[in-house]
Length: 385
Ligand SMILES: *Cc1c(COP(=O)(O)O)cnc(C)c1O
Figure 1 (cartoon, rainbow, N blue to C red):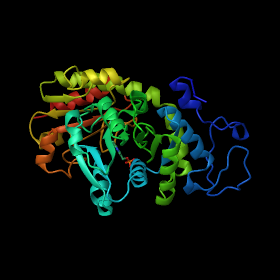
Figure 2 (figure 1 turned 60 degrees about the vertical axis):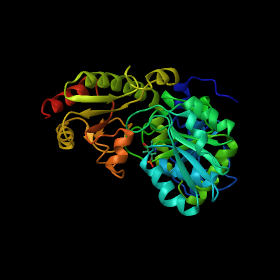
Figure 3 (figure 1 turned 45 degrees about the horizontal axis):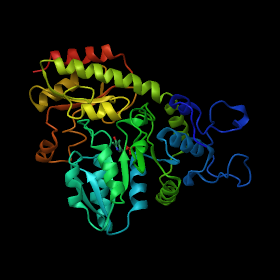
Figure 4 (figure 1 turned 60 degrees about the horizontal axis):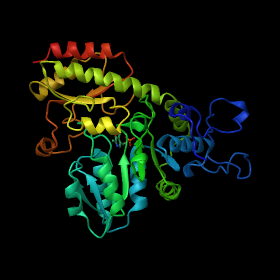
């Protein structure tokens, strides 16, 4: 039956155990690797690695309600979700169309692991629908993209790409990590599979690694079987942490959206800052598209510091509130320089082509008061150059 309750209510209640286990209001941690197979009134629970403990079931049902799909599966990390999806859906000799700059782990998985099994990849410009058909081959099976690109927060032509996939009978897969299901529901735009690194917004507290794949019951069943074989299930304790994190997702993301908008506006006016990338800014290249498709513009932004890479590193060193670290989406503000961290694997020419300069800083807004984060950036910039 379709869940017609509002999003915030689903975050708290969808999929919860009924009847409650011993009356517990919160799903307890079932830290048991195996279950008697006729021993439960709820479901047939079985074995941790097969993701069929009560903690896994509650989480999977809640994630499906969140993504607006028939089914979902939680995984041991975002990369486990991505790996299980590719391994499940692709055969040797198949071909994938992929957005030109995606998460480094995804690129590495395809280039270093799956290429050895004969899976070919072509990169496509997500802003150029006219060019996509050029790269189709008889073996093209899947098109893969991210809902907000890292770190420039660009928005692909999401509607055109979903339509292109349908026309050409390709499975459309979208990594929705940067937007989170609060800001974008890709299933409603026609995407077959939605992947999240729950390590980021869904967990939201920088204290766990987890992932999720959501889609039709049939495809999710197939991906779950692959996950069982890869041995990349989520641990029940991490299920518990993720379930707890999800309950505050809507309020956290709403706060982060608004803080990021204010911080981006502050930076855009600052004389020591060059370009600022955030879809809430009217001069962002896809501001109009993001306004139409997204419920919020996201809590990550990036900006160029005037000067050299050393100046940008000095600015990072002077931040007192934001930690200088990779990752995003948690309650703590995090900042880092993509050319030195997330995109260090690319050549300077490759980085230049996609618009990542040496002085670009990526900033993930936390739950701190936005005026404090602005003050922190202001004092760090005052010392710059
Ligand atoms: C972090 C991240 C991943 C990988 O997730 P892990 O939980 O670290 O395995 C995948 N995609 C995007 C966009 C990410 O930011």
